[in-house]
Image 1 (cartoon, rainbow, N blue to C red):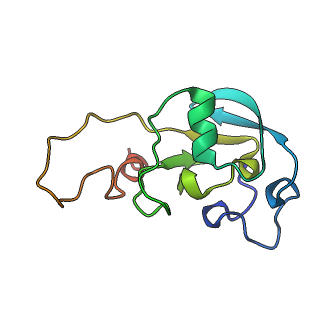
Image 2: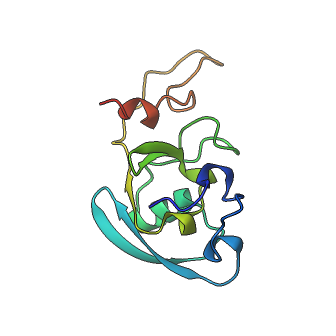
Image 3: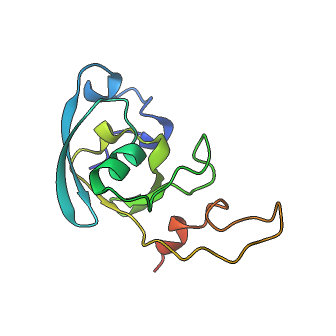
Length: 127
C-alpha cells in the first residue's frame, strides 16, 4: 500500500511518523512477488532499498531528480520513480522491477538513450 504522495518525497499533510524522520523502521515489501522484511531509516529511498534488498542493479539512478525515468518501478500497478520515493511510505506495497533490457547499440554523442529518456519501465506498464 502506498501511504503518501511518495513521488514528492512524502511532503503531504498526512505523513506518517516513520516517514518524517527519526529512528529506523521495519517495513515489508513484495518485490517481484517475493516478500522482504527490512529495517531502514525513514529517509532512505525506495531505489536504495530495492538495490540493497535484491542485490541487483537493474533499477538504477540515472539523474539527480527522477526526471530521466531510469529508476522507475511499478508499485501497486502504477509507475513511480523509486529515487524520489521514501521506502518507509511503501510498507506492504507490491513492487515490480521491470526486466533489464539489453544495452542498445552506441548512439552519437548527445542522442537520447532509452534508459535516460524515461521510457524504460514506463513502457512496460502497457504490456
